[in-house]
Length: 328
Image (cartoon, rainbow, N blue to C red; front, top):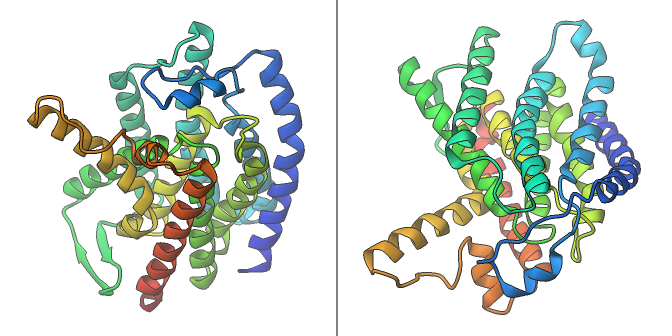
């Protein structure tokens, strides 16, 4: 890891840790408590009222770090780190609107599924258009492990890219259902992108995942079990946007398959559960979906879930790193 990335990580960690105390206090004043799903595990009812929208702390901490440490690069006309941050921020704002409506209405439903989808799709198209305009996006699809690339028709590529972005954002959102789970898994994913950026000499772009790693490590202090606050859709949609944006900014979206294996498994469990329920007229494939709830009902503690899922992500990220080493 380059020194610049290390400084970004440490600075963001300290800044987010300090910001967290103020953000948490304000959320308590606003009575921004989480409403718990009635169809979730019964013991989650005890989490009702825990402050949500805590993702604000690492969004601000990461943003300040990226802007300050990347100032010289921006003066030289390099904006990759800023574009990725702003893209993730747009998704964070969509999540904030969703969270705010939940808090105001005191229920677990904010924006409708259609509203979320349209807003997310618009954000994806905007980002892809900007990246293409800046020459940072190509229609060449790189295949990790095989070290081959092939050109795809631009229209098909943009449709594929928009689908991947929206899917990735919602997959990360589904993973955020247990204290520290989305945080722990995404820390590992951000370390992967930081190391990859350092190895490929993408110093400017590497600022963002490094800063977010630090921000998430600080947030984990507040979010580990028992959680003092939740990141809310504000945080989880921001993280989903960050993961997706980095995959495309580094021109290797297919790497999201191995590094995001937990996100995919969580989403897949929901899709399979719904399909199986309809096909069998009421039977369930899992005790509960998403996947983390199934393991909870199997007796796994929240700490065990975070440890195992993060460890699986670590192994897959290590394999992914090996799979792209031959590219540069």
